[in-house]
Length: 206
Ligand code: ADP
Ligand code: 5GP
Image (cartoon, rainbow, N blue to C red; front, side, top):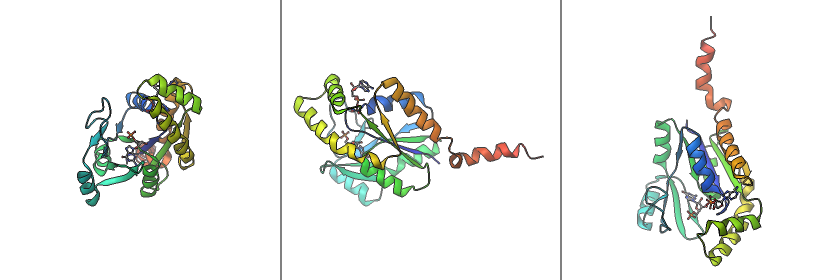
C-alpha cells in the first residue's frame, strides 16, 4: 500500500525547493503530476510540471470518474490528480508526493481514512516579510504579482489546522532534513509494515 504525502504551501514558501530535495534524497517516491486547465507558465513543460488539458478534456475525465481528487482553484482553473498515478505507484512499490491545495488534502483524507494512509504537510514561511523577500529574490514576479501572492498567502495560511505536520522553512538545510525525516518516520508506522514484521517473527518460531 502506497502512502500519499500531500505538501501544501503559499507560493514562495520554498515548497518546490524542498520537494525537489526530498525526491532526490529519499528513495521510492514518485511525484504526482496533476492535470490542469490553466495555461503553462514560463519554462513549464507538459507532462513534467502538469498535464495541460482543455476544459472539455478535463470535464470528460471528471465525468468518467478518473480523478482521485480534484478542485477548482482560485475560482478559475481546474486541477486534478488522476487515479492512474496511485495504481502506478503501487505497482512500483513507491509512495506518492502530491503538491495540491487544502481542498484536495481534505478529499484524500476522507477517501483514505486509515491512520498514516494520507500524510499532510503544510509549509510555512517564517514571516510575511521573509516570504516577500523570497518572492523578490526569486526574481520571477512583478510587484503587482508579488502583492497578489502575499494577499493569497494570508488566506491560505489559515488552513494549517487541517494538516498533520507544519514545517516552518527557516533554515533551508534544516527544513530539508525535517521533511525527509517525516517521510522516513511515517514509513515505519507499525500498521504500515505488518507485512515486513510477520516474516521476521516467523524466523523466531521454533
Ligand atoms: P515555492 O515553490 O513555494 O513557490 P520556491 O521553492 O520557488 O517556493 O522558493 C522561493 C524562493 O525562496 C527561491 O528563490 C528559493 O531559493 C528561496 N528559498 C527557499 N527556501 C529558503 C530558505 N529556507 N531560506 C532562504 N531562501 C529560501
Ligand atoms: P499553480 O497554478 O500555482 O501551479 O497551483 C495553484 C494551486 O493549485 C497550488 O496550491 C497547488 O498546490 C494546487 N494544485 C496543483 N495541482 C493540484 C491538484 O491536482 N489538485 C488540487 N486539489 N490542487 C492542486
